[in-house]
Image 1 (cartoon, one colour):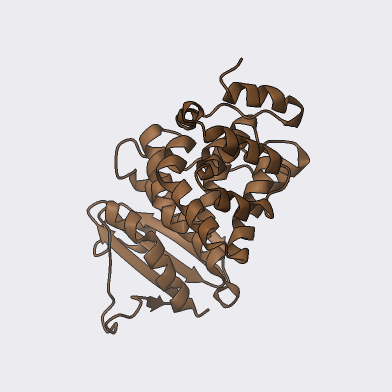
Image 2 (image 1 turned 60 degrees about the vertical axis):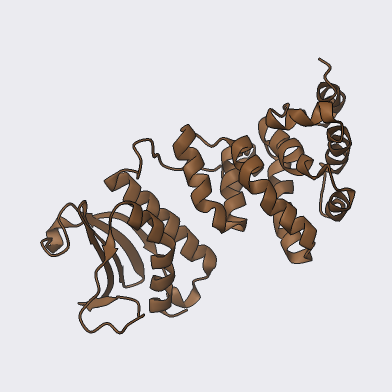
Length: 287
């Protein structure tokens, strides 16, 4: 993509965060209506924002894109006032939507770090467990990683995910999925588009296989257990599920009972296969 196109997508992605902090874009003289407000100076392409908290620059130069922040407003700030917060290698010619999302998240986190959250309780998003850590056995996928990977597939829930972390001080998975995430899963399963189904279940299968008991519980009970009321929806999932297939089917059968369904609000921890019997006993109300 062209550099200006990439900068325009970044502007759109950070719009909510910039607005929350009272920043607005500075429009260089001569910028056409509707064009990306990029200023070119000494070989750099720069987006500038200003507000009561100070000013922000997003600068692209020689294959690197940086976020710079100052405490002075743009009209008063000089180059030495700007401090580099983040810098990333960036090739717009080879960039795709994932690269843009990464930069948007990085810049939003940087803005919050420098200028504080919108609300006093705002905090930085938790760090997800990497694939390398999970595959090596150094760490297990936690619910934070599940939430982070989920909003990559459903980016429209990114701000809801961030708000959840801000509100509770950590990612509360049950609240997020019961109120927002499960609806997206149901829509995907109803459409039954092979590409979207593979994207969703490849992620769920991967995290389930190398996840903590709590994470497995959220996937099996909270998310896929929400399909208990429609056997066709569950049937749509069968070809895409891996090791969790039997547990998901049995859990859905149990959740068709009204006495068990209430447990969705506080789902029991899922146990690995060798302890599957005790897991099912617990769903039935046993010890």
